[in-house]
Image (tube, rainbow, N blue to C red; front, side, top):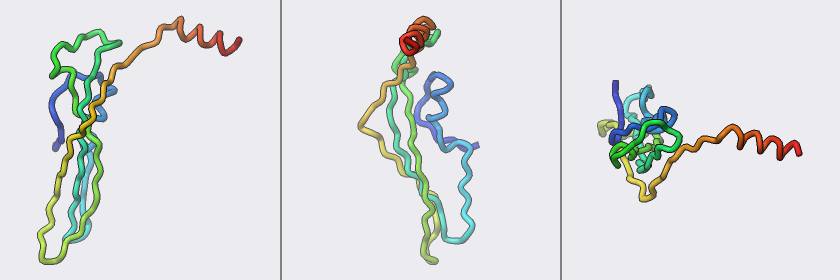
Length: 116
């Protein structure tokens, strides 16, 4: 199994899917002198513990690196050897992620406000 990961985190399960978008993908070329080039944008994300029972104490536990991925098929001349390339770029922008839960009475109040 091949994986592309940056760092280690204890993020919430629904957040983990965006950390490794290339996992499980297969890149097969059908002709000679073709190869895939993969471009990865790595975004630093601070994962908050709001709404979670466990507390993420250290910065290493709170920090995750999300990957935005795009791939394209590249063609080579007959005298060149094809190669898979991985290029990555570290984003200068960081994202803060803190899930918030809503209390049941906030929902009921909103419904009564709509109904009038």
